[in-house]
Image 1 (tube, rainbow, N blue to C red):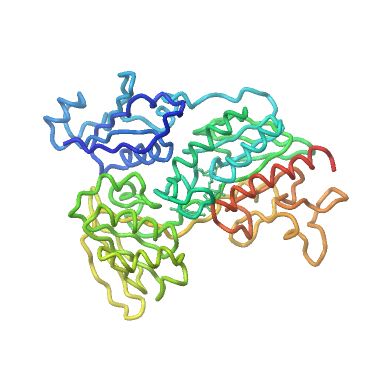
Image 2 (image 1 turned 45 degrees about the vertical axis):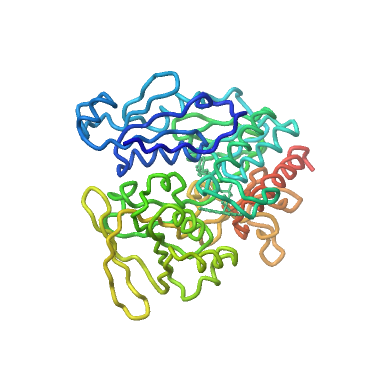
Length: 433
Ligand SMILES: Cc1cc2nc3c(=O)[nH]c(=O)nc-3n(C[C@H](O)[C@H](O)[C@H](O)COP(=O)(O)OP(=O)(O)OC[C@H]3O[C@@H](n4cnc5c(N)ncnc54)[C@H](O)[C@@H]3O)c2cc1C
């Protein structure tokens, strides 16, 4: 049975997937299948997921020996070419998105392609800076993982995160920014007037200024079986790519009490039989925007378990059940569950910054601007006569924008605003002011 999953896409998109969807054949409850669906969904590339039900279908439609053939999933592209069991890099290459840096040196290197990084790329490139953006995964960051952002200015009916990100990518490219997808910054060296970013694949990016917009990574449950069941019933984030695979008689579980969890709950409530939201707190109002509280309360399909924590994940090949503990009574109950979405916030990945002496707070967020001044004193080793600019770290010419920054607001609009503002500070820095 074909499980057709076409995502909205703009006719102006300049990707090879413009004409027809990518066809993916496989079994949905496999980590690689999920990784591919998630990547394509975030990248706003339309695709058809074809769920293989038996060996005969696998032979006839996917051209493999059976359901357990390790060449699955198979991706068939609009030009008829196919990739068997592909990794994300191969898909990126196939879409024509993978390329090497064009310049030996840039005015501005941006790490992270979420709202903050994309905004910095649009403003940097449009204001004449030679600009490169490095993104380890899909464009859009956390925002790209949500089915609908409803509080972003100018979109009264909401906009899908993937669509917003794709528009921003196109806008940045039109202004001449270079975007390197599927590349991860792992280390930096910062000398006066020059930064060298080392990417995981050995590429070096040299730039006169740097903006770190690497956001946060989903926090994990830290439970046994978590790695094994990841992508096979257990997912991090709002699961925008997964709703179309739900059949109407499933009960979906979402962990977390913040807006991202609330959005996931409402998204799944449209397609699932019911949705269970497990939250640690006693009251949704403390952690959730009022519009989501109202919708959750009004939905007959949603059940909220307060004072609750997931304490076990069970299943062999795929998730079969979970255990939830009531934090008030200590009682533990087992629930049959085939899909669990974990939306419990994130943590910054800034180990590289610590290595080069960039000041972080106790949770790893990068400290910038006035927050660097302790009792009016400049940070140790600060080499200039002026104070650090707003959004500048204690390393002159290295800026931080968006969720990775200490004290940031953790919203799309503020990340976009900080990306733009960081570029204004980059101009000042480059002008030597
Ligand atoms: C499910 C969900 C729903 C949300 N809904 C809303 C909403 O409705 N309204 C709202 O205002 N906010 C919402 N938010 C919050 C909002 O999405 C974030 O505040 C925003 O995305 C932060 O943007 P950012 O660019 O700072 O970081 P991120 O979005 O986290 O992007 C960081 C990017 O950096 C990349 N990266 C990380 N490390 C590296 C590296 N070493 N090298 C290269 N790339 C790297 C990551 O892959 C990622 O793409 C939501 C968040 C989630 C998770």
